[in-house]
Image 1 (cartoon, rainbow, N blue to C red):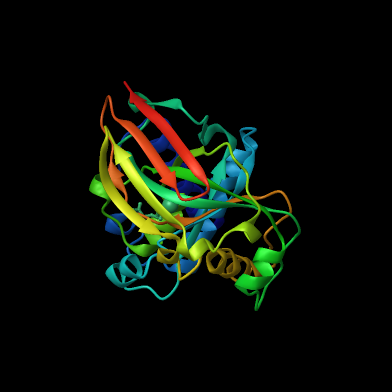
Image 2: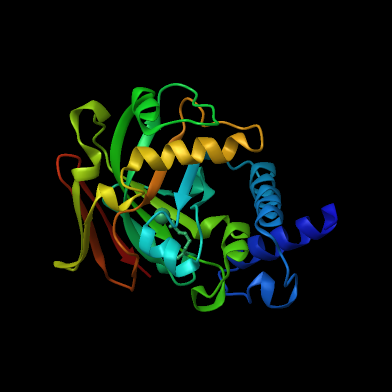
Length: 262
Ligand code: 0L1
Ligand code: MG
């Protein structure tokens, strides 16, 4: 693929996000044989477009981290994307539907990185030693594709469906917890819709950050001090609608809430 082709696909996806409209997946007709490697190069163009607009990266995120999701997609490793500053919603804040396409929410544990972590061969124990804090989060994913219908390269190119994030306000040391055993519930309008434990994320959320560091190492990059990293859904993602009051409760880590407005 030429540099221009990568840029054209990135622009196609950014336009869909900005104009809040679904588009046909890239592999449907623009580039049917888009590979995973090419998809990450499209994602890189998309990230650069946002950086050129003055947006700031909060940190990378991991997606498709549950064994169930990986099996469903027929993949052996998760994917990553990037969270930007304009995607942040304060805890207890509002998520306006008119800014989004067809959002879904999932409960996640986030890591605040205290020291650079450079792969390959990073382990979960090394990640925990270099993590300053952990905190609860609700991620709002909003695939730019019609009906969330995509192949693996499509979703990688689309920045792993990243759209909005609500971080909790309490920072805890990772040493205080067995993060694989931390339970989380996702409640909407007072009804528990989904629940799970940290182990749903590759056995332990620290494994997710280790895998991210090892994946980034393939292109000479690393997890950086100061990155705030979403490790992947503990729960399945639930579709949002106007008026929803959403709460994620995480054992020992606290609660994260938001309301869906029009
Ligand atoms: O954060 C995630 O796990 C999202 C990955 C993309 C899959 C989706 O949009 O459902
Ligand atoms: Mg996620």
